[in-house]
Amino acid sequence: MSMAPQELENTASKYASEAIKFDSQGARGMAITHYQQAIDALVKLLQLYPNSKLNPIYKDRCNSYHNRINALQQAHGVEPAVDPKASDEEQKKSVQRQENENDFEELIMKEKPDVTWDQVIGLDDAKSALRESIVYPTKRPDLFPLGWPKGMLLYGPPGTGKTMLAAATANEMDGYFINVDASSMMSKWLGEAEKNVSKLFSMARQYAEKEGKPVILFVDEVDSLLGSRNSEVGGEVRTKNQFLTEMDGVNGKGKDLMMYVIGATNKPWSLDWPFLRRFQKRIYVSLPTLAARENLFEQYTAKLNKDYKVNPTELAKLFDGYSASDIKDICQAAQIKTVHEIFNAPDYHEPVEGEEPVQPRELTTADFKDIMARRKPSVSTEMIRAYHKWSEEFQAL
Ligand SMILES: Nc1ncnc2c1ncn2[C@@H]1O[C@H](COP(=O)(O)OP(=O)(O)OP(=O)(O)O)[C@@H](O)[C@H]1O
Image (cartoon, rainbow, N blue to C red; front, top):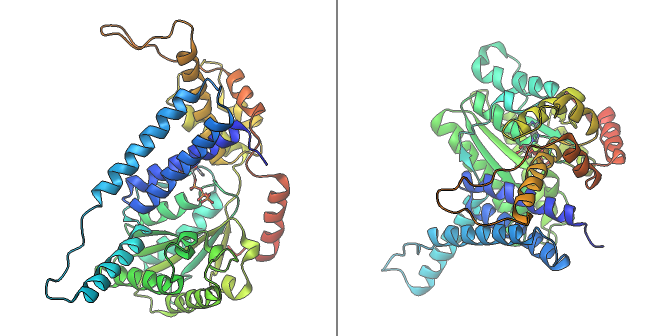
């Protein structure tokens, strides 16, 4: 099946923006992987549509991602220290061990996230559930004699803000945010998923114990811990069991240990009951409502040059069924459209010294309609029905 150019471009932008996010958080390995995926999508685009006028822009982007990958690889090209007295065999092992640990560290971002609640648009139920279950108990543990839930599951369509919610929670309580992607943890590249799971939990525990600060362990694509995509034959069951055991540890620990696990998934139906049971709160992170879409358009067009008639309320009505991340992409695409026009104008030339560089024209509502015609919502209505059906049975707020 061949992909439409718009779809490929969206794929590339999505990978690139994730790469940039990882990059800014110091997660080198994840950044490199995502930059590479963005390049792959752009290369496919260039091959499939060799005559597109946008190709110079795509080539430029490929180059800058390549450069960034090179820079990241060089920054990391320092040889691990070896003990001069150790035998060759031992030295090899020590290097190997360090490499493995580095691989592992790359999956993790430990940072004070800078996402605030108001940057997360809509999702009021999810926000209050997270504040009640996580933020309040850390501030006033004395008010919770019966304890409080330590495991939350955020489920719903992709691009709706699950990661942002977890980051905003960590931000409000001034805690550590450890962000891991379960699917890369399971990937063959790293192997030993079972050991990774236990290393991950013990690392999170150490942070919580040593610093006495709350720790949120955010496990994205948590379903892949059970999934059939795992390349280690037979390893799946052990990895899942290890995860369940670790969750029991977190749930059973005294109140003093401020450690929480937030799992995120787009495929809640692939989780079984033993797994779900460990996540006492299961929160649906839905597509944006009309009001939320209005807000999203307001936010994402704020910096763009636009016609006074471009109206977030009207755009919100037009883009029913689109996710928050779709809306962001759409605003970006609209902006790129005007840039495209600059580069393709018959009188286009590189800026000359002393001359004001050309600026993009004002965006109009027609631009947004044009983009809509070329771009479907990334989540289908059948999918949404499936989430609702699952919620009826399993949501726990
Ligand atoms: N509720 C929201 N408010 C504002 N921006 C949002 C929201 N949801 C998503 N976005 C935008 O889309 C991007 C992707 O969102 P995010 O990674 O949080 O989604 P997700 O639900 O975790 O996606 P996935 O399931 O694909 O991991 C965010 O970086 C943000 O720019």
